[in-house]
Amino acid sequence: MRDLTQGHISGHLLGMAGFIGISLIFQTMYFIVDLYFVSRLGSAAIAGVSAAGNVFFLALAASQLIAIGVMATVAQAVGKKDEAEANLFSDQAISMSLLFGAVTLVLGYAFGGHGVEALTADAASATAGRAYLFAFLPSLAMMFPASAMTSALRGAGVTMPTMVLQTATVLVNVALAPVLIAGWGTGVALGAAGAGWASSIASLVGVVGLVIMFPRVQTYLRLHLNSLKPKFDAWQRIIFIGFPTSLEFLMMFVIFIVIYFVIRDFGADAQAGFGIGGRIMQSIFLPAMAVAFAAAPIAGQNFGAKRYDRVRETFKITAFISCGIMLTLSLLCHINPGILARPFTDDPAVLAISNDYLQIVSWNFVFSGLVMASGSLFQGMGDTRPSLISSATRMLTFVAPILWMSTQPWFTLHHVWLLSVASVMAQCACALWLLFRTFKRKLAPASPIVAAAG
Image 1 (cartoon, helix red, strand yellow):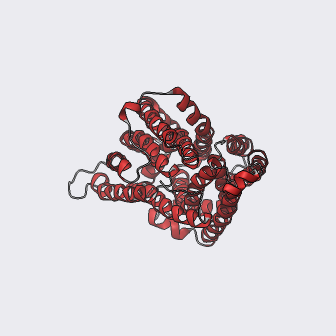
Image 2 (spheres, rainbow, N blue to C red):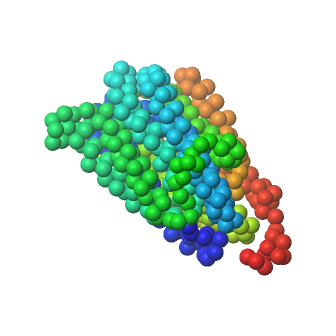
Image 3 (tube, rainbow, N blue to C red):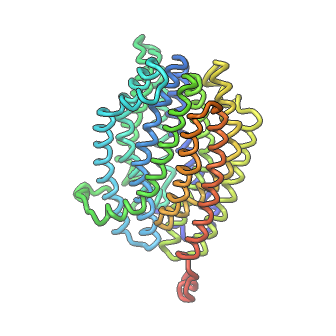
């Protein structure tokens, strides 16, 4: 266990963000490696795998219900020095994750194929998408227990061991991808399905490693098999904190689905270009995401310890670092986005769309950094409803307008990218207003006795 209520916040933030960032980079490498080898199969395969990959956001949305809930409850319990409460929430989060993983498999195999067919532009893309999805579903199911254990450790301030394990699982995926996708060494090429199986096998290695590692990297939390029986009071607390964040990710899923839907009439090249550009954008967001992920347990422990001055300082430092990172990335994408997309395609039409997408949406990177910084503070304080409200504004400022615009004769891809930028700016303004409002309500000045103890 790491006490984040003492010491320099910037030191805690950068130290944890470094490990979390490396972990996120290697986690994202799953998709980059898959995309690299799948791109050798043609535009239809890229479009199909990218469309099917959107189900990742749906599973991620569900997993965040548990992950954010357990991170916040464990962090606050650690801040209060309540070991029993920290273990209660850790055990119950794992119990929930097993149920969610089973439901994911059932729903994915029952309805996933129909969803892919509805999103893709042609039969070849749909075939590749279904093959990838059905092989990738076990990986999505294992995401739930992996997120529960990793987030419980993050709430206790432990990040480095999980980063090492994430690195190992990505190396497994990197080794398996060319073997299963292209048939290197075996002569049996599984194509798009091979990408899914490579990720699923690597995820299994990661979950087994986490179970072995969990009680060995810290002494505060333990895996209690006899405590996995549901305790609905604990589930209710985890859900209260995690559900708004889960809905946020669900809305992100809806936004991506809407984009795929409205651009499908522009053909597989448009979907492939957006798929590549979207994956690149997710990857380059990782440094700012790492800072935000590190800020949440710091804010959570200090909020539990009633060190409200340190909660405010956590936001200031997080926002400053995030904006600096995102401004640098924005300049890179605006000046030369092609350098990022060329490794994944040599098709001029696909490359042009990807470059155009990255060049335009780079204008909202700084605003996205501030949104992530605000969200991490809401998580730490144990009330993610304001973050959900700010995300919901995109349903009004992006989804509804773009569905109408797509029916007009003058509609182009540029309208999608430009409206996305405007909607993120509006979301940022709403998030900051709600954050400062929450600070006034929740972070009352400490009493003289509490301040002296601090």
